[in-house]
Image (cartoon, rainbow, N blue to C red; front, side, top):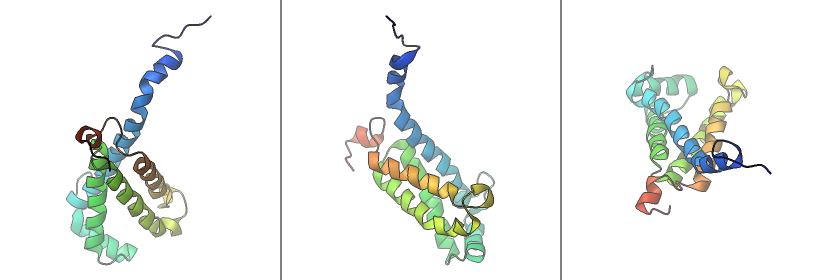
Length: 150
């Protein structure tokens, strides 16, 4: 007869299981936020809104570049923050998923791998956002705390 303790086997993992989804949701938000901060504020080696807008217009053909840079920065930064907090989780995740679906075609000519500027990264973030959209904020979220059933 075997026994399972809190430090081994299923009991240990069962105790941690409720943390797996918040870990994914929060990490997704935390990893998106710096990309928005680069575009909006020029933080983390970014070039800020004006330069990013110029790049979007001249290199990607996205006109008006400033508006697209602003939208991208707002979605990544504040959408990411919403995921971290679990506040308006479903709307934020849906907007992020749609945003990623829109930018995939921009990266298609570069192939799949992100190291070549391909669509791997936006595809991954889009699918993560879609999964978060399906689940919502759940247990460890402001949505739950505030009674929001969005």
